[in-house]
Structures are given as C-alpha cells and as structure tokens.
Amino acid sequence: MTPGEYRLEEGEISLNAGRATATVVVANRGDRPIQVGSHFHFFEVNPALSFERWRAYGMRLNITAGTAVRFEPGQQRTVELVALAGERKVFGFNGEVMGELQDTPPGKD
Image (cartoon, rainbow, N blue to C red; front, side, top):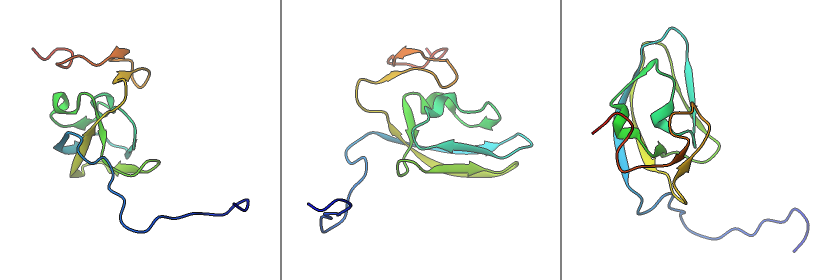
C-alpha cells in the first residue's frame, strides 16, 4: 500500500442496519438556531427543541458520522433517530444520564 492510497470497496454501504429507530417531529421554540451533531444523545439536546423527548432516550440522529442537523428558530422538522450501540453508557452531554442507559428514561414510568 502506498501512503495516502485508498482501497475502496464496490457497492453501497448501509449505515446502522438492523438497529432500532424512532421518528420524531422536532420544533425549535427558541430564538436562535440550534445544531445537533450526529452522535449527541438526542434525549439531552437543548430544551428549546420541543418533541416527545422520552422517545429519544438512548438514541442519536440517524445521519452520517461527523455531520449535524440545524434547527432554525420556529422551524419544525421530522428526524429519524437510531439506538446507541456498544456498551450503551452515556456520559457528559447535559449530565442527565451519566452512566448506563436504563429500560425507561428518567421521569418516565
């Protein structure tokens, strides 16, 4: 292999195949644009984004890694979410989980 060389495989690449997904309608009720990155725990996004938050627990945007979705003030859009994989532990973000994901989101019984 030569430094900088690419070896590309033919065909389509399917992202997140076989993983659980959810579709939510999100509205930006704030007065500023809000951008959410591909791997942000959607349950913990800016509170100015209005949607059925409990449905986003343990999920992120189902978009290509390193990209983001921007919500303009007053804008409403439908987005698809995909379940987080791996050990399903969430740390950081807005500090609402800080550990293993449970079967139900905090405050939802």
